[in-house]
Length: 205
Image (cartoon, rainbow, N blue to C red):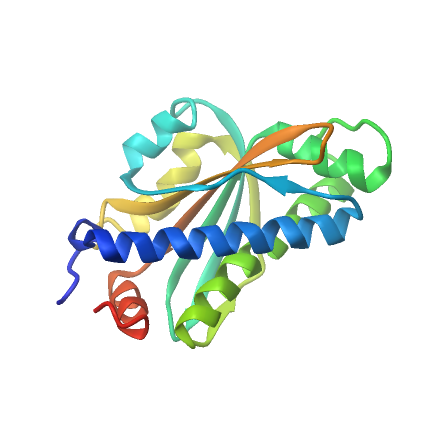
């Protein structure tokens, strides 16, 4: 079965994506726990295929201010992975790293570097989940960082994939460290050909 659009995914293939999301989220929680040197728990992630407008609405509307981290995927699979983090997530990470209550400031280069490193670790967690299940070789670029309105952040993949698909794989995670809790939003955006290759590697294409 050929995939021409994300909408062509059947329920079994969507279940495979949910399993990838579950494993990736679990890996991310473990990696964060090691980085922060304290337990980090995660709720069961929600994995759905949505259009960009619906994603923007889920995130509080196109004018909602969020931290965005963009990484490109290359190798056997091509595409993008984006993390959209609420400021509370950055506050939680920085407070744990520094051992005191912190408030993320985009002008703070050390804080931005720490958040980018978290994005790197989390992206690798999801990519490693895909690689381990499919046997495919996948590489990640260093993350690009911004703090902007959701609509502006989502315009990057919207423009890039305008002629490919208007949908993305959306993974909602919620982490907590027994003191604070914060959400992260993973946008997994493989090119359609890469998505088809992924499904074939899983025996589902």
